[in-house]
Image 1 (cartoon, rainbow, N blue to C red):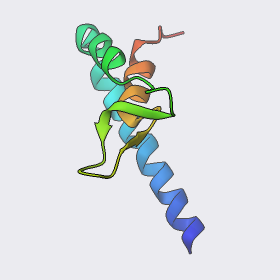
Image 2: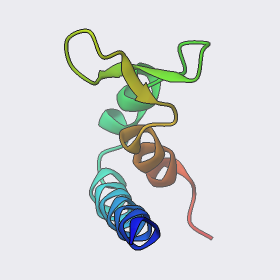
Image 3: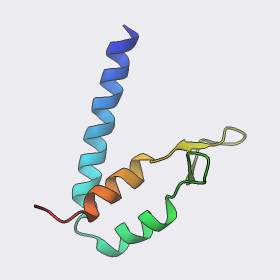
Image 4: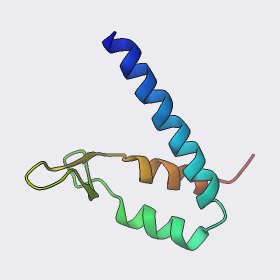
Length: 76
């Protein structure tokens, strides 16, 4: 059951990343800004994506960075 849940979350995250990348591909300035802000803090976490008070940060690369990186790649 846990594996099915993990697979479902991975599929949902991929779908969200793909949709966000599609949107960002028309926004090159915003994409560049997101790539500059959502960077590895040197410990494997995103500097810009907090999990909430006292909980640290999201693992890097975060969903926003992944979508911006995908959007900034030339098609081909």
